Length: 266
Image (cartoon, rainbow, N blue to C red; front, side):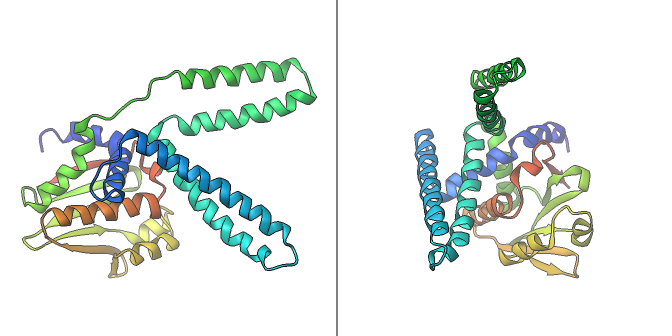
């Protein structure tokens, strides 16, 4: 199909942002989050992170009591909050992880420098601070509307039978993709070659079980399938909600960065 290459290149940089936009759409009852609302959301998660950290500390101090047994429960909750925070920070700032890594390195070297005023540590600190300052001064980039709408437009074209099928390629090197196909009554999403993907560690048995829990059925032992009855816009929203689960609950969303694109089929 003419123009597929351009669409594919655009999509490779916009899959993650598109899924964030889907997530915002769903979690606000079809009302998009404004920028200041995202800041508020991150602040609330940070408060929860601090609160859980305090709970864990209290529980660990209660060595002889029942509180000690709750530490593991709170630790699991803390991990989920921290993962959610990391995802949202990455949406707000594409350089977040690098900035976070540099900040932690700076803190570590500052502690070392307090006890050892060596020239090496001094120069290393200066180098790390310069890198962080450079990242902090780099303008944040925004996806264009065209990029953000690629996936949603493809879903709408499928639901309204303007196209018959397309593939959402997640990892080209491993031939890992979701195949979307439509008929008069339903949209089917298929993940083929399950046995091969598990063998090659594209995903694991634990992720396979989660995929089954969120609605996929394993057919012939080698294909995951899920069916959506066509109900106009409602069907599109249900599929987008499923994709949010895939990219934020089942898989690590950054695993598909720079590898993902849409391939249209006749």
